[in-house]
Image (cartoon, rainbow, N blue to C red; front, top):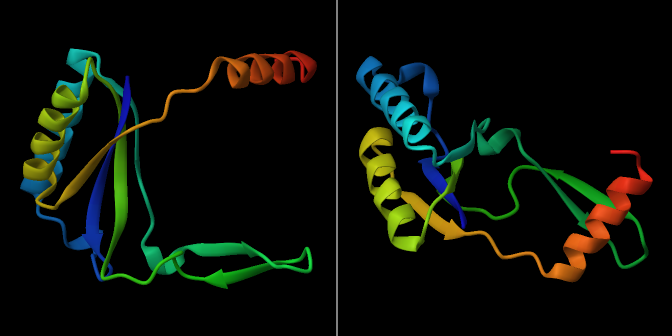
Amino acid sequence: MQFLVAIHLPDDYDPSKEDPSLIKDISDLNEEMIAKGVRVFVGGLQTATRAKTIRARNNGGMVVTDGPFVEAKEHVGGFWVLECADFDEAVEWGKKATVACRAPVEVREFMGVPPERLKARAEAEARAGR
């Protein structure tokens, strides 16, 4: 089962002001995740102010606006994708992430992919020569 562990940071978060101990704690957590074989992917995101939101218009056009999709005081600042046995294990990793990042995190399971979608995906990849 795969889970998203998303780090929520305030909009005015400045990574250049991160304490060296914070960077070490996050690095240590990444090493632990790798050692346990749960880390699939990890990524940090630019600030929400650098986001673009794209919406479809009723006339078939598109509108691109500056900023995140929703207005909020916090946005996702980074994330891990983890492979865990169950939700409880993912929550335990989320607790460790909360401590290491000194920020709230959200843990969510990815939706399973229905077999018909897996088959369609495999067929599309075969046609594309992958």
